[in-house]
Length: 273
Image (tube, rainbow, N blue to C red; front, side, top):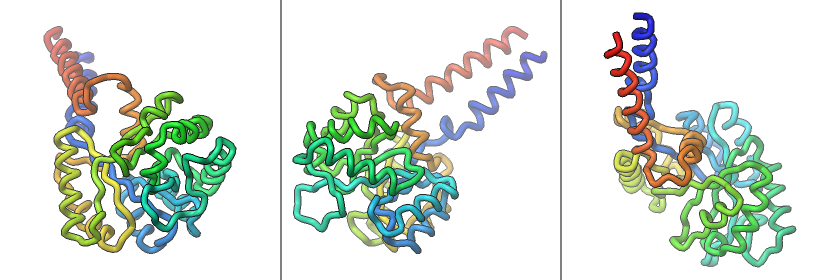
């Protein structure tokens, strides 16, 4: 009788009430933190499960990273990398032509400027992330800090995963950009697309920016997320990915596998009574 009670408790905690089993997981990352203090503080206040990506040479980098950490948000470094086009660039933007010492100095400075960072994603970077040698140099430095990498996928020919695999650095990839078009209707549509992909694949990663329109959409939508959608920390997704690295099954299939395992244990003990 006691064993039956114990297994019922375990079943209830890990199967019936687990958001990972019952819900599809939506990760929201907001880039370009460090310049728009008011908007960024609002985003942080919406949920501790929103990940903030801080530009290392922005004027409010240390302050906003500290505030986010205090609120329970994941903090990552929004590392400037060279794009293919001609655009205004952040200080210390990484280029494939840089040598290892230059790349090391830039990343070391970024880590100092963004306290509490647990990962990195690329700011721009279509030129840099498509260069295998350049990204291997980046991953070499990152490997000394135990940081994961979120590939913003600003170019389809990205070499991020290939470079990271050499140094056993966990990599996850962006699924949806929320605000390429800075109007609320378009942003709402993109967020709905991320929710659709989360339901289809078990999780989805959406990246946005602290624009006023994005803030307004998040304020409305996060209060009314569907019951089957769970807002998830990026670090939790990375950890889940590491657990089944090398497996061909999807994250959703992994969760379903453990759900079936709990059912089997539950019914085994029921039959023993």
